[in-house]
Amino acid sequence: MKCQFCEKPATFHITELTEPAGPQVMHLCEEHAKGFLHKEASPPMTAIASALAKQLSQGSDDLEELDQKECPVCGISFFEFRNSGRLGCPYDYTHFEADLRPLLINVHDKTEHIGKKPTRSAGTADSLARMIGMRREMEEAIEREDYERASEIRDELKAMEDPIAPPANDSDETS
Amino acid sequence: MKREADFDELARYTGEWMRGEGPESDIVISTRIRLARNLADFPFIRRCSDEDRLSIERTVRARMESLTDQHWEAAQYVDLEPLSEIDRQLLVERQLISREIAESNGSRAVAFDAAEGYSVMVNEEDHLRIQVMKSGLDVKNTWEQVNRIDNMLEEVILYAFHPRYGYLTACPTNVGTGLRVSVMLHLPALVITEQMDRVFRSMQRINVTVRGLYGEGSQYTGDFYQVSNQVTLGHTEADLLALVGDEVAPKIIEYERKAREALLKNNRDDLHDEVSRAMGILSTARKISSEETMHHLSKIRLGISMGLIDQLDVKVINQLFLQSQSAHLQKLQGRILGTAERHARRASFLQHHLTGKEGLWN
Image (tube, rainbow over all chains, first blue to last red; front, side, top):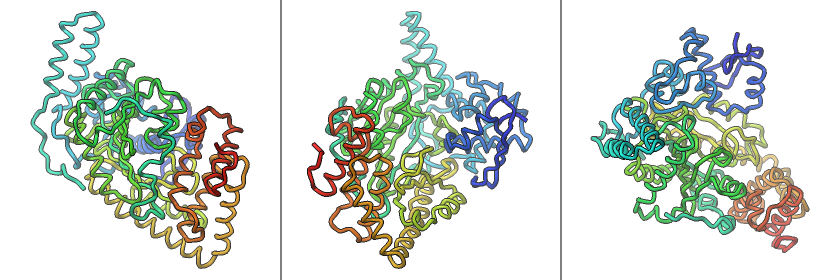
């Protein structure tokens, strides 16, 4: 059996009794077990690790295949996310949607936001991805001293940032 | 918004949130709410290039400077990258910035107001971390202020928001509302009566985390515990605020009060002895570490709250908690001190403030 955090063999099998969802078994290599036992792993990492452990023990996606999946916008692999506990860009929530959902359920017990909404929004996940791509293109244009193209992109980005009709908003005010 | 901050001046005062007032302030130190937000057109920090980070910092600064809100005018904007380690540490001790942002690299900044009611970290784990702190248990007012700052920033910054998942954050444990409400409690009686384990266990069943004073992964020092919501997605802000502010914190306060009453009833002499000894050590020690200081100040604070010490104000103790920490001590001395020297200066600083004697201080 492999460690949940890396490719090394899992030599430590730790049962975490304090998880809200009940006892969780963690399979870790020596190095990661040390980190875990010395509480170096911050609480979010612990939550993510145990959620993923549960997901895998339930026989979901083949881990090796999933680990190689990469976001087309920021290039982060699922492996990198699993190791760091941090995503690479807003589009990851769309690209890894099916893979993240069990984790969201484990951590939050819910998958849908019902709280505050901003009064303006970039629209869809695709437009968020497009904006990140355009910004990168703008930086490349500046680098090759194509200032005309860079300023065109800047104007486009600015237009995209301008207020768009707010999404349906019924729970904005909370106190 | 001002572009400079006087750190020597900052070290001389405690923030508004440490004044030791507000509801339940005998047990509750402070209420803090933070919102995690990200810009729509940049990758999250982990996948940002140095140029991206610089560009985020510049964009946010320019947008913040364009704000004309009167409450925002007192804000100071501090670029953390060129700042000395000791000044960054000073901001950590005041909880205006996190340890993580202090110790990271690259473009990063903080905007905060002079009375330190709020701070906005730029390029922490998320592009923006907006936080407001208030003295005592005051979830409602803290939320109103943080929400107002969020609304104000939202007018000039386009956030990464997903119709289904809400405010998108670098870590999926913050997604949705991006909201973390934390109440800092002083629970010495529960610690003395060995009931903290029971409190921990009961909290874990209801999606609340309990941590030590300086946040994630820290050792518990000085009997201070932070209670905060664990989940951020699938609940309204109002629900999360109510969970911590109306449900959990009042329950722990009640436990602590009962433990204090029991201590007074059954172990008054022992408790009085312990409090007096703490006072004795801090009034006479010639060298002392910050951990030991925290430990004894905690006992003195308990003694004041329980009427066992009457010549001291809790405000003074809060001030000593803050100013006896390393960076504050060094700022007040106006120079860098080695460990041994720090321990000696700390002892004389405490002696001076607890006994009124000049001692070796200044």
